[in-house]
Image (tube, rainbow, N blue to C red; front, side):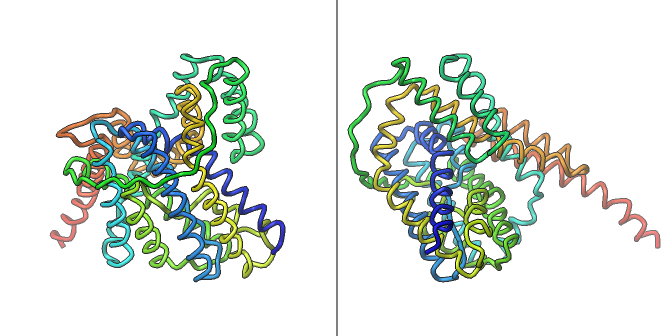
Length: 390
């Protein structure tokens, strides 16, 4: 196997995991997951990514690599009033929707009919609190936050993918140097912990549905575009079916949605991985092996993060989501006619509004759809009048 293929796959694993693991841990804390449940969450989602990536890459002979839904984890982390069992129920419901999208074509068409500007505005609203938190938490703990931000900004000029890793290293290093951490834990192997899903109406509407939309819009659709850009014809139904089933099986162990990788996928799908496109699928096997190792040590990762100040984790999460936030907000306001509805969607989502026990992401999308629907109805009315006159 070509060395560049192995290196590319392992770099994708390191960047994908290290760049967003803090967001998943923050999500687990937001829904009240215990330390054991959090490590189970990480282990289960890593196993889901490994098994499904290896299966899809081998079956279709193309580098199909999966990721956890980073925007989805951010959505979970900004939710309020949802317990862990209810969150697990929402994860399972989201997985069922993804499977149905693979089986029922009209459902996929319905999702595609949601204006991109509104879907990305929901995502931007979800991410806003995290990105802003990187600054506010740095004020609370400047000894760690300021060096992390400086390293992140400097490294991002050269490599956005490695900027978060650099911030992580400097954050941990600074905390260790000034004794701001608890004693480091001994390494332990991960264990999967079963949580019986609880299906709560508010969680299904306020978390499962937005999680499904955000995952489809910000992970799966861009992931298909990355494969097509490198000359592949992705098997859409097969990928959605596999990711949906992987998410459904792993949900009771705490894992949120498994999806197609987007940004890190490009590391494995391009000519830098291997000059022959027909052989790049082997990178998916190496990628799967990397996540199997991470699944085994997930408990150690959770324990390690727990030994450091909570502000460090939140600062890291905010920095990691800066790029996705910029991209989402740019797309949201780039469609001139839809900009007003998109801004309304963003504002309502970012407000953190909760009504009837349902979170802001749902109300933001609903507000945007209502405004955009009214705009389109008004736009079509003069045309209908002309047709009647004729």
